[in-house]
Length: 70
Image (cartoon, rainbow, N blue to C red; front, side, top):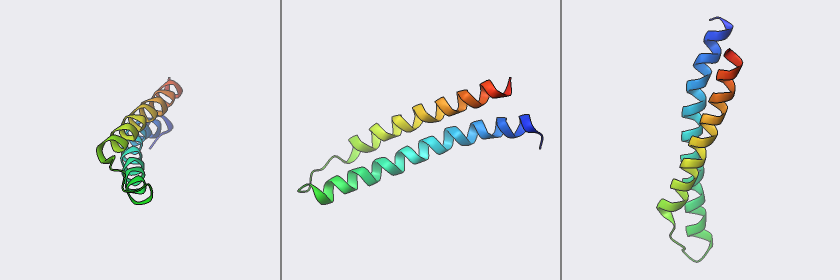
């Protein structure tokens, strides 16, 4: 693969990695809150919050890589 092809492939990995990392962090956060703070049930909210944070960070990193391709 050439340099620009690798950067273009990296854009997709940034998007997917941000989404997966956000989901995993959100799930772990909800699980931690439920176990440590008197059984506080926040299951969908922490996961959704970090899911959107992961999407934003993935797009931000992808945008940086796309600017580098040009």
